Amino acid sequence: MVKAAGGPYCQFAPAETEAKEKLLRRSLDDSSMKIAYDAIIQKHSEMLQLCRSQTWPQDQAVWLRLYPCDASPGSLDYVLDRIVNLGYNKIHLEVFYDSQVLLPSGANPTPWTSVVHSPEKQDVDLLQQTIDRAHQRGLKVYAWLFTMNFGYTYAQRSDRADTLARNGTGQDTLTFVHDRSQAFVDPYSRQAQTDYYNLVQEVLKRQPDGILFDYIRYPRGVGGQSYVHNVRDLWIYSESSLNALYNRASNQKGQAVIKKYVDTGNITVSDIKAIDLQFPEETYAKWQGRRNLSNDKAAIESRRNNLQRDLWFFSVAHAAQGIIDFLSFAAKPAQERNLPAGAVFFPDANRLVGTTAFDSRLQAWDKFPADLEWHPMAYKVCGEKTNCITDQVETVIKSANQKTTVIPALAGAWGKVYRQHPPLETQIEALRKTTPQINSMSHFSYAWQEPERDRQRRACNF
Image (cartoon, rainbow, N blue to C red; front, side, top):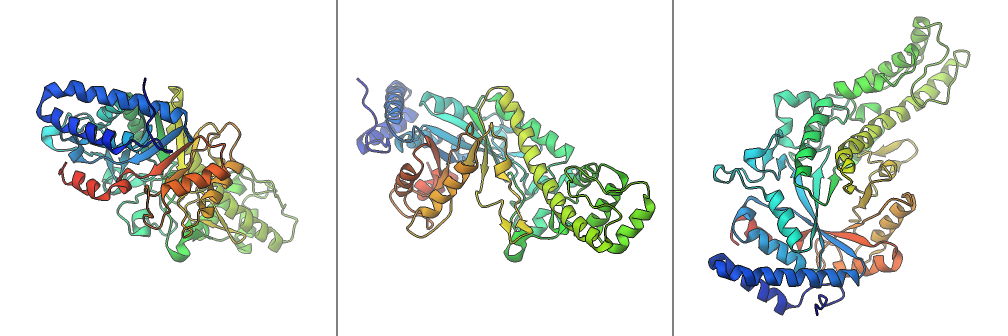
């Protein structure tokens, strides 16, 4: 009779983990030992499945990044075995990040570089290997992809310059945040959509158990640039986004007003008078969603104030809607295959600052599709306490549709404070008390559980 993995978090006893690692090392030198190694893998799979079926939360995932060295014999097996040992039954595997994709270099039709790109390993498919070997161990694998952040090398391509998001001063996001890892695209760009669609299709060919979309937002600036309060702060100045914005106008007067406002960052009494003369037959400036109409008989200053306010909120809504539409577009191929698709977001990334300014990320997660999984990154730090973490999760649950599955992501390590985050056990118990209705969560990250071993893997020192 199979026994469940021990402990309150389904973690395996040292004797079990040591026996498995010993068999793995022996099987690398002696193929006859593979039978015994496969047997203990199967045994641990059954133990883990039994334990998780009896333990809250039922699903517990870990966020994992692989390195080129994980293509070396034994390295990937060790990582997956360690994940089982820690009581996880699901992996969020980083597949697209920092201009790199976890696809074999010999079969990579995307504009991004393969993680494993040495000529002698061009056929190595770490994504497929991870999915297959994880399934042997009873683990599910979700493919985790950056979304609007396409990476530095993509941004350097001359044939992709038009895809980049730009603000009113012509900056792209690399210039704005001075971070080579953050090159955001215009979500309205057809070329960016096509590149991303092809990437998702390639990932789905490997048949992951689900797919997660991260960086569904614009970048966050520093200091006063961490919020937007003028239209020229918005990332809507690339050609595709501007055209989409202008096409939201419902009449000529509306389009003229929008263009003037976007061009100058303001609308003046003189602008209004000139546009009135240009389109005398149109009483109102109309655009998609505009309800607060003031006709040309109203006092000109009152009209200007109304237009200024309405144009600002309209422009912000356009920027935010681009993110939501890109997410829906990205998730569609998975949903057509009846695979779970999820959105990863910061609960505090859609804040209103004061009465008219907004967090620069414009991550309107409360408007994300309700049929996606919602993965709030509850990473807030409040000393040794956990209330700021549970508050973030509760905020998301209150905003979510009843049919939406909320799966919190926690940051930390087992058994210790790590980078100011309380031990994972402490966070888990806090959520168990405040949000017992949740039955799934994830932990960032695998590398944080054993930082030294992570450095060794990166250096091929398995």
